[in-house]
Amino acid sequence: MARINSRNLTTAIVAFTTTALLFVYSRTSINSAKRDAARHRAADGGQLDWRNESLRKHGALQRPEGPSLMGALFSSTKKKDDKTIAPASIKADEEALRAARGKRKTAEK
Image 1 (spheres, rainbow, N blue to C red):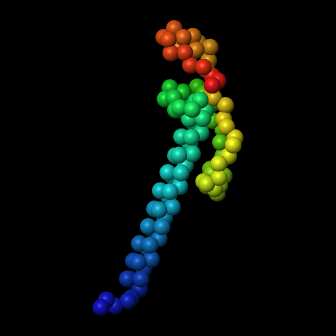
Image 2 (cartoon, rainbow, N blue to C red):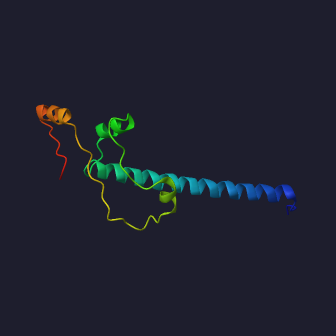
Image 3 (spheres, rainbow, N blue to C red):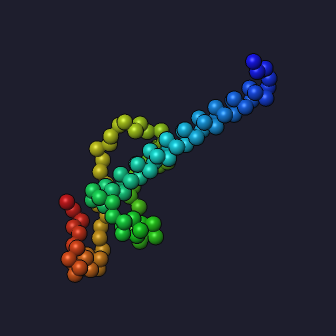
């Protein structure tokens, strides 16, 4: 039988702490990614639009409004808010280009 000493006890505590931190981090990042995807999907009118996403990342479109990081961390994931985000507006030249291509996208559904 192994002897219990400070090294064995410390190793067990460190392993447990590391596992707990990894679990919390992975759950938080997965929930945050789901929340962000839902917010961006709502801003694009129900389906994620990669063009609008690219424009948002490069500063051409506003990012969708949503809870802050602390609000997202401490809010309940079970509770559904009935607030919806209005779809992002499409500039007139983009709409004309889409109409010319035959892929007209409406701003409201």
